[in-house]
Length: 389
Ligand SMILES: C[S@@+](CC[C@H](N)C(=O)[O-])C[C@H]1O[C@@H](n2cnc3c(N)ncnc32)[C@H](O)[C@@H]1O
Image (cartoon, rainbow, N blue to C red):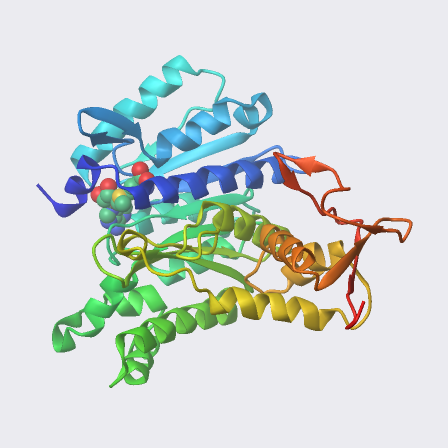
């Protein structure tokens, strides 16, 4: 039995988190785009069999999760086409059975398409007719979820992104990439496919020479982001780091690629809410080993973030400036919920004052509460509390 098949014999926390992000974001993406489009497309490029077995119980895989959220909304059911690509014959047959059974029970959706192909071939089947006739493809959300690194062709991702409003959610196997980089002559051409050319793969090899593991990781990610920005023209990229279960090192990233500021802001907020970090709040990471180690809650990044907020307050600012304007900048990985939380903390320690729409000072206890927590709406104005006040 191949490693790829073994993957479906256990439903791990990191898989659950990946599915949660996918479901939440896909729902948002489809709902935003359905306002202007009668046709939308979801492609699951490494679809698997549609189900995970976990201690005798079954958990839906990404195809069934996508179909469920589409069928639960009448508008989406009418408008969204789904395509599932799976290269393994047995897994494809299992997938076909799962998907057909779902379709029989939910005939309100468009009939799903299952392709027994390599990702690259499946995408060729999908894209070529549109490219040939210079027709526009429906806005497409592409999920690229390999077990390893093989089969993820950068040129295929770039071809899809040539069409408007398309986005990609990618399992970026940094551990696998590090391993292949260390293979010397036996490396093959996987890296060239993944990074787009032999030249990119060789440049990366040179760049990581004699670097520590963390430095390598940073360089690999930064290089990929640069290539995506340069060759795809997508400037909004968010990476969510997944730590290994048994070691305090990174296993992989989940990477979202879009040209659209709104998508970027929504994805950051979703990832932040799903994230688990040592500091006990959300974040763009799922810590696993670190959390079981019970490390001290100390977060210099969060403190620096709060300082950066104070620096912005050379003049009073609407909360919306933080929630919207700053989070729209492609180099800012903080999201609206992070700003909200930081502003409330700064208010609590007396560093800032929150004014209502009439300019009257408020306190957390005089404002509306939501789920038992104080709120700070985008209409409020923030000023810095000057020394001695
Ligand atoms: C991590 S699993 C996918 C899990 C699935 N996305 C989910 O969340 O339920 C990766 C799948 O991709 C398939 N696969 C591997 N290489 C492929 C390729 N080049 N093209 C298409 N499918 C591939 C494997 O057989 C495996 O089923």
